[in-house]
Length: 442
Ligand SMILES: Cc1ncc(COP(=O)(O)O)c(C=O)c1O
Image (cartoon, rainbow, N blue to C red; front, top):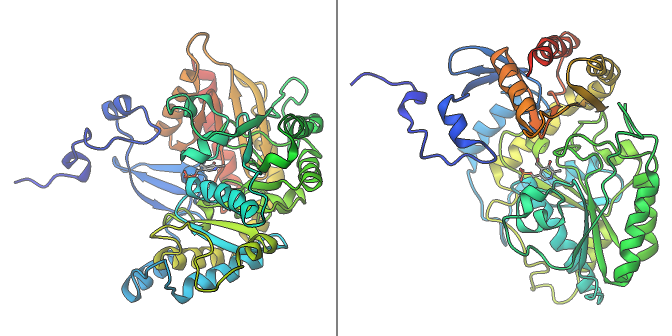
């Protein structure tokens, strides 16, 4: 029998791919078989510059030795320990490290395996927190239009993407949504926070008044909406949400699955905007994307509210088989060390001006109708082909891949979020690759 490459061996039909156009992909598969630092290697041996840190997660770059070695060592030493009623040292060590880099007051960590699980965990903590304090009538959850909070039922209920919601029945009850803050007419081509729109935070007050604030458990927002096209918040907007929450006993949840771990040049977006939430949802960059893991940070007051009653009783009926998994914990510890040793959050901050200038230099390129940047994130919005939304940006994605650049598209928006180890010449390479592609699009 002749030896077959893994690509040939596989029957591509068996794998039902997530968030993918399966039939189209399987006609012309795009396969990565290797990665190192800023590059992927394709099945046909080409190098592809990673303009998206995988899926917004590989913040330290690919196949970093410290992380690889930590995983290898841990797998050989303690592969798994039960997550319930048992422990292992690395999960505790990691939690201590995480709270030491988290915004002040977020002193406890609950582990999950993904952003979606972190979101649903945060929503459950919020509901249960009010209940253990005797405020069980606070059962409503408030999200926002254009919010993405993963794909589990809680997350799609508070999320604001119609396509992710419409197929799945009635979702959670008791959920309402604030208006989104995207207003390109008033805030064209923003660099960082937008100038206009802080007043949209008053929408929380409107909804709270409609339902009565005493029925509202929590509000959840992404500090910068990522998946719906990189929408930086208006100046003062998040601070005002914080004030309204404080006035009405509502918990503020930040979904930092994308913005966490250095993406904006600070450890968390909470540091960038100087607003501390009550609960902070993270995943992705926590382990550099290498092993699935999420972490939900909560304020001391929330944790302490649960630590009541008889000590033999489980305080919070929630958790996953792999919460704080030893190998994931080892990967996260090595990831945080890598961020620290290499000063990657500071590096992201130092690179932000060059990044901003480079991405905004595409203003005026064919089809471009808006460009938005904040930290090491960028979005280039294209005018859709009439009657065929998403097609133009997807075609840019395929062409970029063929030219050796990985970008991501959402609707007709190109989203960019490179590993924080990117060099200035590679930022220039992204722009130089994209320019002719934009010109060539139908
Ligand atoms: C803000 C936000 N929340 C939650 C998620 C879901 O994370 P996961 O895909 O790990 O479940 C994502 C994923 O992109 C995200 O961007």
